[in-house]
Amino acid sequence: RTTELDSICLKAEVIPVLAIERIEDAVPLGRALVEGGLTVLEVTLRTDCALEAVKRLKQALPQASIGVGTVLTPAQYRQSEQVGADFVVTPGTTEALYRYGVTSPVPMLPGVATVSELMTGWQYGYRRFKFFPAEASGGVKALKAFAGPIPEARFCPTGGINLDNAEDYLALKNVMCVGGSWLTPKSLVDAEDWTGIRQLAREAAERFHH
Ligand code: 3PG
Image 1 (cartoon, rainbow, N blue to C red):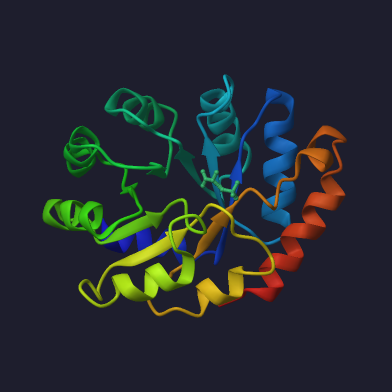
Image 2 (image 1 turned 135 degrees about the vertical axis):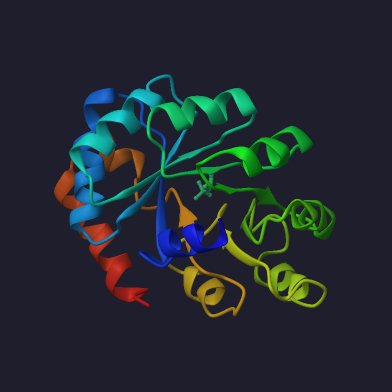
């Protein structure tokens, strides 16, 4: 589990978070990000066409790792498995998700914001977490503090991360990558400006390269 998640997260220091409104955007948007150098994507279940988008992305971009985000229930987790998700991301955790995740062939990055949630996940065997909502939950300071009691845990913070503060998070020893929606601005997506998206991705990929 941990190894699988590490190999995915090591492919990119930055994971774009996608909320795809129009199914026709899925492949050109994903392709622009991957061509820009960001090969790990998270497609959130916040829009109706999200699962179909994952299917198409998996087919069109076999070199990329496609995760499903905003997974709230085991039922959504199963749907994500069925469309070929490489990993699953949850904004928070429930006992049901933690329990389902350990039996699934698809690894889960559970979302936590407190040490208690982290401790619960740790008991289930989870070692890699999403830290969400990062900026609102204490940001860099909170992550530094988490390293006190549980130094082995590693995080992908998301929520309020952007070009200006990503570096501060990536400098922490317990941060493996950061995620966010800043790489897929609605204005560029609505304008189908895939060149603009590719450029944004390239800037992030070059700036935050391992
Ligand atoms: C997520 O689901 O990870 C967040 O919505 C991303 O947060 P952001 O929109 O603040 O980048």
